[in-house]
Image (cartoon, rainbow, N blue to C red; front, side):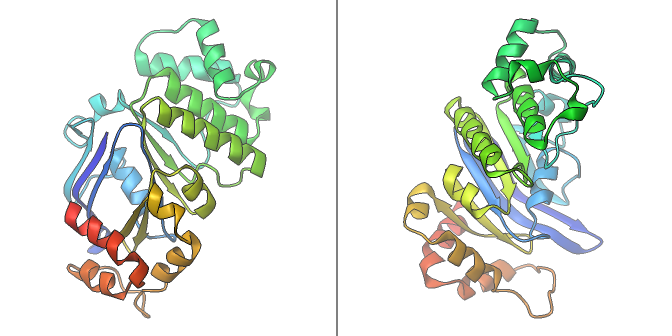
Length: 269
């Protein structure tokens, strides 16, 4: 489970993330939508302890990320926009290396090959150097690494950016499988279709504020693209950074169709 409690990050007085309250349960995919600079990647980075919070806490399975970063790493996996692997090694060798690093011991080769196959990587590709892999193949190795270390939480930052439609569809199926296995998944994305396809819940961020959340039922009856664009248009003309209390002001500006969703977010706080 992933939890953010009043999670805030400011850089030189500019608020990148403003009092985020969020829970992602086991077996749930929470998709964060928003324009560049909305706070999506900052949220991911705080859970990964890449940056320290200005205020509030990020928790993974009840463990404070800032207080116990090494313990948190045992429970979490991360797939960025581009999975960084050793190009001179094969997919199998990369999986073996990162799995051994995470677990402290090696797993048998046949188990690793099975994981790569389950992630959708062809057996012959597993023995080839990663330098010849497509982006989609790299993503599959990243998924296999997450499965190999039995991560309870998975963080993704624009994972389907640059993937062709077939590769993106295969990646969506892998996410569904991890969700079924009880993994808590938090994904930052610009992809409205992906969010609606795989998301258990979707949250829309604006200038560091989570301004709305929608459940699967909400998504089934909503024009997500229209809602997203309507919310994105509710900004200051001058592009000023968020200030304390601004979330409540912006809630009043949202389309009436989304007032209930935002009210639910405020109650959760």
